[in-house]
Length: 80
Image (cartoon, rainbow, N blue to C red):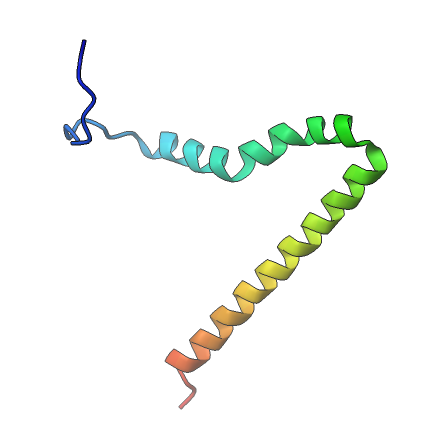
């Protein structure tokens, strides 16, 4: 029986494709897999309302990120 260690052996590398699938699964996987259960448990109307609310929050968050990137760009690279 092998012991669990926190030290890396140097052999724990994976390809770019596998890394891409990991990132895709982290971003998309959980939400997409739980949506059918949400609709089954909550009903069509309530689930649609929550889904719309989350979509509005996501769009608002993305707009804040884009706006702060534009402000940072203006601070770090002013027009001359």
